[in-house]
Length: 192
Image 1 (tube, helix red, strand yellow):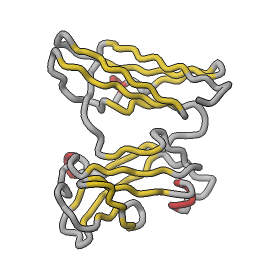
Image 2 (tube, rainbow, N blue to C red):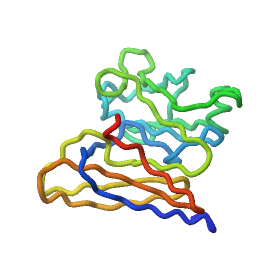
Image 3 (tube, rainbow, N blue to C red):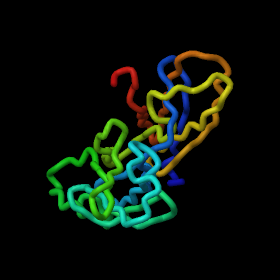
Image 4 (cartoon, rainbow, N blue to C red):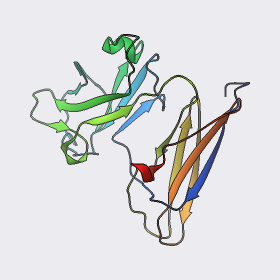
């Protein structure tokens, strides 16, 4: 925890749509900044699943082709350092909003993409107080009586809470962060 920058996270469950799925890409840190290094973790079982069970080398197409490190079966990692900006050679005058990825086998015969054969995007956050819901993803159906782990990150802090969905209906998860008199909230999913 960064003292004196105490970040308070609050989770509001409101009417809207609940999302719940594992993520095809996770990042460390959870909220990557253009001025810092980031590690990209790819789960080959998700998205199109085109690389699930593949045991050869896997590469990421992300502006340059570079080999990933195998972490375990169907799990790969890419260390983007010393910073996102330096790795991609982006000028200071440019704003980096996202990183885009397609993963492929060493002979290009297999690909790992997002569902619908799309590229995989990772948001890059600007300096200052930022917040994001890490889990669950958007637009997923949850069976009544089941519980969902809600995870959020704000700058250098994170929070998790398991929420039981006892009755059917539509739900909206809203997360806010407060630090030094500044308040930010995740995007309103109804506007997307």
